[in-house]
Amino acid sequence: MTELSPRERARAATEQDIRRHARTLLVEHGSDAVTLRAIARELGITAPALYRYYASREDLLRQLCDDICADLSDELSTAFDPSSEDFLGRTFAVCRRFRAWALAHPKEFALVFATPKDRSRQPDRFASVFLSIVAPMMSENPNAEEKVKAPIDLPDLSVQQKALADAFSHEGIDMPPEAMDAEAVYFLMRWWVRLYGHIALEVFGRFPFDLFHADQLFDATLHELAAESGLT
Image (cartoon, rainbow, N blue to C red; front, side, top):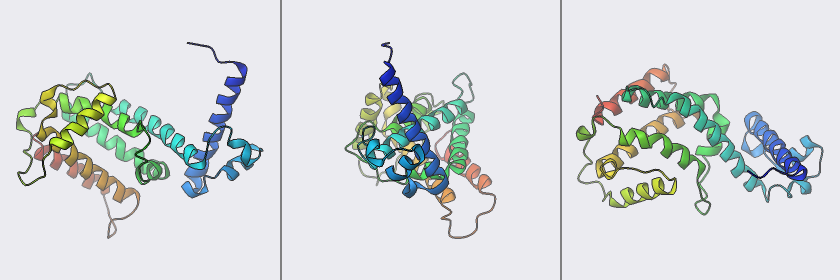
Protein backbone atom coordinates (compact mmCIF):
# COMPACT_ATOMS: atom_id res chain seq x y z
CA MET A 1 0.00 0.00 0.00
CA THR A 2 1.35 3.40 -1.01
CA GLU A 3 2.27 5.59 1.93
CA LEU A 4 0.46 8.93 2.04
CA SER A 5 2.46 12.09 1.68
CA PRO A 6 2.41 14.65 4.52
CA ARG A 7 0.01 16.80 2.46
CA GLU A 8 -2.31 13.84 1.85
CA ARG A 9 -2.26 12.93 5.54
CA ALA A 10 -3.06 16.52 6.47
CA ARG A 11 -5.96 16.58 4.01
CA ALA A 12 -7.34 13.28 5.31
CA ALA A 13 -7.11 14.57 8.89
CA THR A 14 -8.98 17.74 7.95
CA GLU A 15 -11.70 15.72 6.21
CA GLN A 16 -12.10 13.63 9.36
CA ASP A 17 -12.33 16.81 11.46
CA ILE A 18 -15.01 18.20 9.16
CA ARG A 19 -17.09 15.03 9.36
CA ARG A 20 -16.59 14.76 13.11
CA HIS A 21 -17.94 18.28 13.62
CA ALA A 22 -20.73 17.60 11.13
CA ARG A 23 -21.78 14.52 13.06
CA THR A 24 -21.73 16.39 16.35
CA LEU A 25 -24.05 19.01 14.86
CA LEU A 26 -26.28 16.25 13.49
CA VAL A 27 -26.55 14.46 16.83
CA GLU A 28 -27.11 17.60 18.88
CA HIS A 29 -29.33 19.62 16.55
CA GLY A 30 -30.45 17.53 13.58
CA SER A 31 -29.52 17.49 9.92
CA ASP A 32 -30.71 21.06 9.25
CA ALA A 33 -27.93 22.29 11.55
CA VAL A 34 -25.25 20.61 9.44
CA THR A 35 -24.12 23.53 7.28
CA LEU A 36 -20.72 24.37 5.86
CA ARG A 37 -20.85 27.75 7.57
CA ALA A 38 -21.45 26.20 11.00
CA ILE A 39 -18.66 23.66 10.51
CA ALA A 40 -16.25 26.31 9.27
CA ARG A 41 -17.00 28.35 12.37
CA GLU A 42 -16.18 25.34 14.56
CA LEU A 43 -12.91 24.76 12.70
CA GLY A 44 -11.93 28.42 12.62
CA ILE A 45 -11.76 28.64 8.84
CA THR A 46 -13.85 30.26 6.13
CA ALA A 47 -16.83 28.44 4.62
CA PRO A 48 -15.41 28.65 1.06
CA ALA A 49 -12.32 26.79 2.29
CA LEU A 50 -14.47 23.73 2.95
CA TYR A 51 -15.25 23.42 -0.74
CA ARG A 52 -11.70 22.17 -1.22
CA TYR A 53 -12.78 19.06 0.68
CA TYR A 54 -16.48 18.65 -0.11
CA ALA A 55 -18.21 19.89 -3.25
CA SER A 56 -21.42 20.78 -1.42
CA ARG A 57 -23.39 20.30 1.76
CA GLU A 58 -25.14 17.37 0.07
CA ASP A 59 -21.78 15.77 -0.68
CA LEU A 60 -20.79 16.13 2.97
CA LEU A 61 -24.07 14.59 4.13
CA ARG A 62 -23.57 11.64 1.78
CA GLN A 63 -20.11 11.05 3.23
CA LEU A 64 -21.60 11.33 6.71
CA CYS A 65 -24.18 8.69 5.77
CA ASP A 66 -21.34 6.39 4.73
CA ASP A 67 -19.63 6.91 8.10
CA ILE A 68 -22.87 6.14 9.93
CA CYS A 69 -23.45 3.00 7.86
CA ALA A 70 -19.91 1.84 8.61
CA ASP A 71 -20.64 2.17 12.33
CA LEU A 72 -23.95 0.35 11.87
CA SER A 73 -22.16 -2.44 10.01
CA ASP A 74 -19.76 -2.89 12.91
CA GLU A 75 -22.68 -2.86 15.34
CA LEU A 76 -24.68 -5.51 13.49
CA SER A 77 -21.64 -7.66 12.76
CA THR A 78 -20.94 -7.99 16.48
CA ALA A 79 -24.47 -9.37 16.93
CA PHE A 80 -24.13 -11.93 14.12
CA ASP A 81 -22.04 -14.89 15.25
CA PRO A 82 -21.38 -17.07 12.19
CA SER A 83 -19.99 -19.84 14.40
CA SER A 84 -23.29 -20.24 16.22
CA GLU A 85 -25.56 -23.04 15.04
CA ASP A 86 -28.60 -21.24 16.45
CA PHE A 87 -29.85 -19.72 13.19
CA LEU A 88 -32.98 -18.18 14.69
CA GLY A 89 -31.03 -16.80 17.65
CA ARG A 90 -28.55 -15.10 15.31
CA THR A 91 -31.38 -13.65 13.24
CA PHE A 92 -33.15 -12.26 16.29
CA ALA A 93 -29.88 -10.89 17.68
CA VAL A 94 -29.24 -8.84 14.54
CA CYS A 95 -32.81 -7.50 14.48
CA ARG A 96 -32.67 -6.52 18.14
CA ARG A 97 -29.28 -4.86 17.72
CA PHE A 98 -30.60 -2.83 14.78
CA ARG A 99 -33.52 -1.59 16.89
CA ALA A 100 -31.22 -0.78 19.83
CA TRP A 101 -28.84 1.13 17.55
CA ALA A 102 -31.70 3.11 15.99
CA LEU A 103 -33.14 4.10 19.36
CA ALA A 104 -29.70 5.14 20.61
CA HIS A 105 -28.92 7.12 17.43
CA PRO A 106 -32.22 8.68 16.28
CA LYS A 107 -30.64 11.57 14.36
CA GLU A 108 -28.25 9.26 12.51
CA PHE A 109 -31.11 6.84 11.82
CA ALA A 110 -33.18 9.71 10.43
CA LEU A 111 -30.39 10.90 8.14
CA VAL A 112 -29.78 7.44 6.67
CA PHE A 113 -33.32 6.06 6.60
CA ALA A 114 -35.62 9.07 6.34
CA THR A 115 -33.73 10.91 3.59
CA PRO A 116 -34.74 10.24 -0.03
CA LYS A 117 -32.17 8.04 -1.70
CA ASP A 118 -30.06 9.54 -4.46
CA ARG A 119 -30.44 6.74 -7.01
CA SER A 120 -27.90 8.33 -9.34
CA ARG A 121 -25.18 7.64 -6.78
CA GLN A 122 -23.66 4.18 -6.41
CA PRO A 123 -22.83 2.27 -4.40
CA ASP A 124 -25.36 2.57 -1.61
CA ARG A 125 -23.40 1.93 1.58
CA PHE A 126 -26.41 0.73 3.53
CA ALA A 127 -27.21 -1.76 0.77
CA SER A 128 -23.77 -3.26 1.34
CA VAL A 129 -24.38 -3.51 5.09
CA PHE A 130 -27.87 -4.95 4.68
CA LEU A 131 -26.99 -7.50 2.01
CA SER A 132 -23.91 -8.75 3.85
CA ILE A 133 -26.08 -9.49 6.89
CA VAL A 134 -29.07 -11.05 5.12
CA ALA A 135 -27.07 -13.20 2.67
CA PRO A 136 -26.17 -15.88 5.23
CA MET A 137 -29.67 -15.70 6.67
CA MET A 138 -31.13 -16.54 3.27
CA SER A 139 -28.56 -19.14 2.23
CA GLU A 140 -28.35 -20.89 5.61
CA ASN A 141 -32.06 -21.00 6.43
CA PRO A 142 -32.40 -24.47 7.97
CA ASN A 143 -36.12 -24.55 7.24
CA ALA A 144 -35.86 -23.42 3.62
CA GLU A 145 -38.31 -26.07 2.44
CA GLU A 146 -40.97 -24.71 4.79
CA LYS A 147 -40.72 -21.05 3.81
CA VAL A 148 -43.99 -19.17 3.58
CA LYS A 149 -45.37 -19.21 0.06
CA ALA A 150 -45.76 -15.94 -1.81
CA PRO A 151 -49.44 -15.12 -2.35
CA ILE A 152 -50.62 -15.86 -5.86
CA ASP A 153 -52.09 -12.37 -6.28
CA LEU A 154 -48.73 -10.68 -5.60
CA PRO A 155 -47.26 -9.11 -8.77
CA ASP A 156 -44.65 -11.23 -10.53
CA LEU A 157 -41.64 -11.51 -8.22
CA SER A 158 -39.20 -12.29 -11.03
CA VAL A 159 -38.30 -8.61 -11.38
CA GLN A 160 -37.60 -8.44 -7.64
CA GLN A 161 -35.56 -11.64 -7.83
CA LYS A 162 -33.38 -10.19 -10.57
CA ALA A 163 -32.96 -6.89 -8.73
CA LEU A 164 -31.91 -8.72 -5.56
CA ALA A 165 -29.56 -11.03 -7.48
CA ASP A 166 -27.98 -8.01 -9.19
CA ALA A 167 -27.56 -6.29 -5.81
CA PHE A 168 -25.80 -9.33 -4.34
CA SER A 169 -23.59 -9.59 -7.44
CA HIS A 170 -22.70 -5.89 -7.22
CA GLU A 171 -21.51 -6.46 -3.65
CA GLY A 172 -19.49 -9.53 -4.67
CA ILE A 173 -21.74 -11.84 -2.65
CA ASP A 174 -22.12 -15.32 -4.15
CA MET A 175 -25.63 -16.60 -3.53
CA PRO A 176 -26.74 -20.16 -4.42
CA PRO A 177 -29.66 -20.16 -6.89
CA GLU A 178 -31.89 -22.12 -4.52
CA ALA A 179 -31.59 -19.32 -1.96
CA MET A 180 -32.98 -16.80 -4.45
CA ASP A 181 -36.36 -18.30 -5.29
CA ALA A 182 -39.59 -16.29 -5.18
CA GLU A 183 -40.37 -17.38 -1.62
CA ALA A 184 -36.92 -16.24 -0.43
CA VAL A 185 -37.41 -12.81 -1.96
CA TYR A 186 -40.89 -12.56 -0.44
CA PHE A 187 -39.42 -13.68 2.89
CA LEU A 188 -36.83 -10.91 2.78
CA MET A 189 -39.31 -8.20 1.81
CA ARG A 190 -41.73 -9.20 4.56
CA TRP A 191 -39.04 -9.09 7.24
CA TRP A 192 -37.63 -5.74 6.15
CA VAL A 193 -41.01 -4.00 5.80
CA ARG A 194 -42.23 -5.21 9.19
CA LEU A 195 -39.00 -4.56 11.08
CA TYR A 196 -38.24 -1.19 9.53
CA GLY A 197 -41.86 -0.12 9.94
CA HIS A 198 -41.86 -0.92 13.65
CA ILE A 199 -38.46 0.66 14.31
CA ALA A 200 -39.21 3.83 12.33
CA LEU A 201 -42.54 4.34 14.10
CA GLU A 202 -40.82 3.88 17.44
CA VAL A 203 -37.83 6.13 16.69
CA PHE A 204 -39.99 8.93 15.31
CA GLY A 205 -42.68 8.54 17.95
CA ARG A 206 -45.35 8.04 15.31
CA PHE A 207 -47.50 5.41 16.96
CA PRO A 208 -51.03 6.90 17.11
CA PHE A 209 -51.16 6.40 20.87
CA ASP A 210 -48.72 6.08 23.76
CA LEU A 211 -46.83 2.84 23.34
CA PHE A 212 -45.71 0.94 26.42
CA HIS A 213 -43.39 -2.09 26.52
CA ALA A 214 -42.31 -1.51 22.91
CA ASP A 215 -39.54 -4.06 23.35
CA GLN A 216 -42.10 -6.78 24.04
CA LEU A 217 -44.11 -5.78 20.98
CA PHE A 218 -40.94 -5.91 18.88
CA ASP A 219 -40.08 -9.38 20.17
CA ALA A 220 -43.63 -10.53 19.47
CA THR A 221 -43.22 -9.26 15.91
CA LEU A 222 -39.98 -11.23 15.53
CA HIS A 223 -41.62 -14.44 16.73
CA GLU A 224 -44.63 -13.90 14.47
CA LEU A 225 -42.36 -13.33 11.46
CA ALA A 226 -40.33 -16.42 12.31
CA ALA A 227 -43.45 -18.58 12.58
CA GLU A 228 -44.96 -17.16 9.38
CA SER A 229 -41.65 -17.68 7.55
CA GLY A 230 -41.28 -21.31 8.57
CA LEU A 231 -38.35 -20.67 10.92
CA THR A 232 -39.98 -22.24 13.98
